[in-house]
Image 1 (cartoon, rainbow, N blue to C red):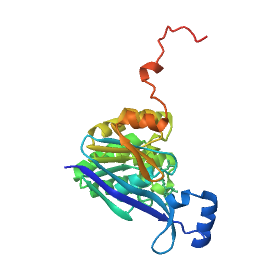
Image 2 (tube, helix red, strand yellow):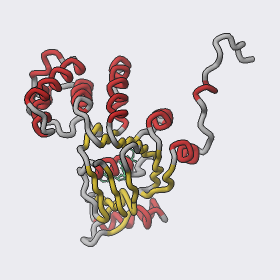
Image 3 (tube, helix red, strand yellow):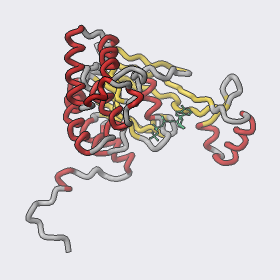
Length: 268
Ligand SMILES: Nc1ncnc2c1ncn2[C@@H]1O[C@H](COP(=O)(O)OP(=O)(O)OP(=O)(O)O)[C@@H](O)[C@H]1O
């Protein structure tokens, strides 16, 4: 059984720089009213930024949830809380089922080990048999096309090589719950084309998808529900089209509308 329950979730980050009182004063001057909603003191009198506040929702198999919101709205924080990377300061996050993440290329990667060793380690942690791990290794090796770098420590990789290994590995093992940030669209055009087919297969087979992206077309294609986060709080939660239109402040363009017939006369 796969499901997710998030209840009244609250996540804060302490702001360590400088003296807490003077920081609050200067924040108060520059941010005015916002200080009361986003910045506060915790019980140790530290100034903290409230990344998520009172967030609640549940997800069942078949749900494809997209997270939208401006910069700093709390999308990445929510994905990381679902992945168990951030502990809630208040409320709870319960995830039943195996989790696959496409959040940060370096996440779960041991930089001192080679690409091949990282793959084997991940296979072991995911409870795969030796045979299954060998299959994953062959699959990732062929997808990532790292050549000799496959047997060199990951800390010698370029950022693009890192993305190829991390993406190949994350998409080689089928999770119940797939958590994705939009970095997966990084990379050159030929990588993106190969990545998309692989990703679509994973997205269609996972029970639950949670995806954060600034790309409206990706949301419209892949999600059946959207949560609009605003300053760490849920501003709207509903069917993709409805939330996307409210968020963008305009009706969605239909794909058919965009496609002009080949023999259409040139615009005047
Ligand atoms: N490690 C951290 N330390 C301090 N503050 C943080 C940290 N991570 C996030 N924040 C703060 O939490 C808030 C939410 O950030 P988050 O990265 O979740 O937003 P986001 O919606 O993913 O933004 P973007 O679209 O710009 O990536 C922001 O105000 C951010 O400054």
